[in-house]
Image 1 (tube, rainbow, N blue to C red):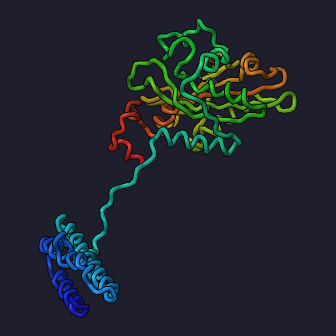
Image 2 (cartoon, protein in one colour; image 1 turned 135 degrees about the horizontal axis):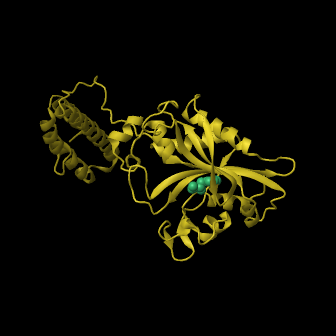
Image 3 (tube, rainbow, N blue to C red; image 1 turned 180 degrees about the vertical axis):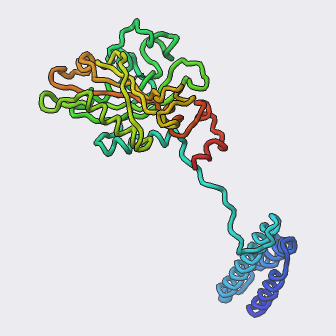
Length: 339
Ligand code: PHE
């Protein structure tokens, strides 16, 4: 073929493709650029073209091939829309596949980090597999304490275990840093609980720890209460309040259990708060001097508070989720309601 013959053949082929439907376009693809196609044959025949004409000839053939391929490709995408019943109306909006949303537990943990971040707390982290010292001994929990029992804790032999609380991150943080310390530690925790509507063997906590130096910066239970009241309002809404009930934890003295006013009935009493108007959300207290000794701090020179929130608890009352299992089943009908 001469150059002008190529020019003409190219114009003819593009006209032919322009009027073809999707099925005909496939036949034309085979005819022109298939393995034995007309353009393919010209490319193969290039070696017989006199040397000086080869560059111009090659360029013309390649351009023809690109133009034909693009025209054929355009046909098949229009055809695909036609197959979906859209009748090639290119003005219709595209299909919407929906965006993913953050899981409620992730939301609660991120929001908690953001709220405490405003108060000067940073986020600390620790491993899910801990040792006995960090999870129990340094937290003043003796070997005979029921929480160390094989029936309550997942042990790997005598020393390693799946952490039963985020409190070991307190120990790690204090051993690695000097006061002042202000951290929160969101993470996974594990206990040998049988799963039901309010229990799960794998759940999440958010630990908090504030330690400062004595005598210049004493930390009090009132400081703890004011920080938790601020957190309650930020997380649950301006009307939320907290109350402390006396309790016992081996690693805090005094110890309290922390209730939020019921988010659903605003304190009036409902089925979720068992008519009490309050929901338990955390354990807390002033760091026990024995814990300070275990991490190498002088209890005469420091004081501090610690708290541990249940993340599932907060998510369930914040979003009105009646069954903890919904948080782990990954049913998009449930998860997408938070979008
Ligand atoms: N670790 C305790 C629990 O899991 C909660 C807690 C944390 C209590 C910090 C006091 C201080 O129940």
